Image (cartoon, rainbow, N blue to C red; front, side, top):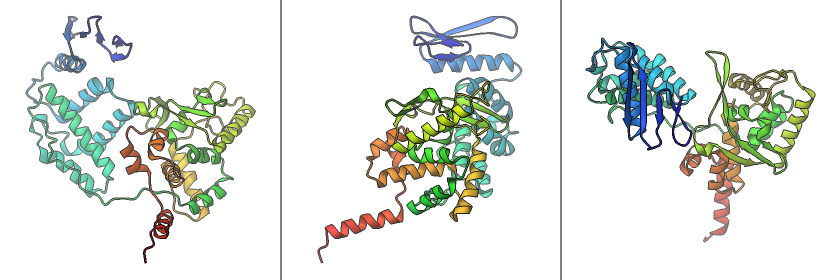
Length: 378
């Protein structure tokens, strides 16, 4: 695994020289070593991918006389497989296997037109896929064809501006009202996962970040929570995978509320009592484990949440609802949006305001009443 001058890993076969030039090298199937130098890293990666492809598929010319399936298989293993996060790679594979393959997989790559790519999205719309899933399918096609263009397999990317996701009605994100939150907490107190849920309501952390939280990340003296990683469950392999956070802004410190501090102290007490059913377990240093010292996949949380909501007589929620609810309570309590952005770990303020802040009808009523009392001119 080669590295740049700062020590960052660049991938197999790529490194940076002291003079700043990037070099790519590999040994072809005849045992001959091939090497090139480039000023830009992306040019270096493109050359290596193209050269390895030509070496592996010597009987396929660069005019694009290959199927979309063949290109995707090479692209996902040899280009994206070495340059993107595991979760991104999984999204590409899911969308291709479930939606793209059956529509254009057998087509010759150079014959794919914008109308064929649009048809992928139209079929997804007819099958009632969510807008976010269609957007990921479009992004997958755009990326794979963009790299095919860079490697001279096609002359133009068929995912043109005219290829658009069919519009879906805007769906309001589920958020607890204050009353629903009280009902949920009352019912959840008897749940084995009560402290897990309450902690998200106190910190706004994602469920994957909750799983990734380790005791070394907790600064009890200064009452700070360091968010440094996430852990995602891969249902296909049945394994938990530790990954980096999506952006640098995801790496953040969250001050503890008094309730968050008490939750962690209780978790620490439980951890000491269990010391340790999971002594040799890979994730035994994680904070939020079940009574057997294991991590929870989201599906387990969601089933438990559905049962709790039914008991409380409220509409069912997902783990992300708890994060949404935290953000909304923060705004309602007067927190500055910029501060909330940092706590949630968003790259920009617009994302915070557009996606996570949902002021309830009760709060809107209160604010309009304040305005009316102040500017009563009748």
